Amino acid sequence: MILIRCDISNKIGTGHFRRIENLLDYVDAKKLIFLVKTDNKKNLIFKKHLVYFLEENNEIDKFIALNNKYNIDLVILDLLKYKRGYIENIKKTLNKKIISLHEFDNYSIYSDLSINYNFRKRFINESNKRLLGSKYIIFRKNIENYGNNSNENYIFVFFGGSDPKNLTKFFIDNIVKINPMKKFLIKVGSFSKFTNKNYNLKNIVFCKEEDEIFDLISRSKCVVVSGGNVMYESIFFKKKTLVLAQNKHQAKFAKIGEDLGYNEFFGCMPNVNIELLNERINNPKIYKNETKIDHKGKLRIKNKIEKLILQ
Image (cartoon, rainbow, N blue to C red):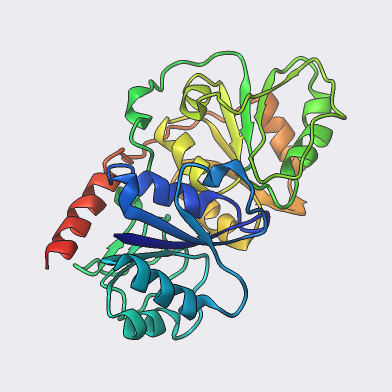
């Protein structure tokens, strides 16, 4: 039995939960348990999983109780930040193998395997216990089924599962409204507080929940996103990728991506260069996306996990 611990909320977003789903979609769902801290327990994103919700100040007790109930074999941690001693405490309490996914370089010697697939400036040696860099990006398994050569006449816009800075509203008010001849296809995340009831603009189509995001990206003329997982998906499809960051750590990866020639970065809310963004919407910069990112990151991790479990 595998126990997955992650957070999902309006502030943090859905990316951590989604990438764990992507990583483990080859595993029997009956063998997975999620331990989640959230501000929306009734969200449909949890519907197809066995999920236990975490309250304040009872985390270790919850780990112990779930281990006693299910006899956990492996713990997977995917948090935005790890407090000092957090992974050590879980390791010493449960004495189980631990895989930790990271946004920052706050690795612990108590993780049996650490994974960080974000773009990076400085080089840290990869090892058997540490998988680093874009060759370990965790895409959903069907991403390779979609082409990347189509360029239909719309701009796809998506600012993540929660959009905590309400970039959707910001973008509509500052870009969509002044470009009535451009067609925008906009997706709103399941944890987002944005509502489209006040917008009845002829140049906007709001996506349906069931619309396949890879299909929408792969057929688009241009993609406008925040700096989370969907940024990497757009880059995979070699699209003109325009990035507005929700926070500093998204800004960091978007800036590195820009330096590598994969995307363009227009700032972090509230300091977005709206004039330059509008210029790019109307006169896209011609650049070659030479990324060698493939869809096999999850398979590379899967092989490492299987070896770890067998040890």
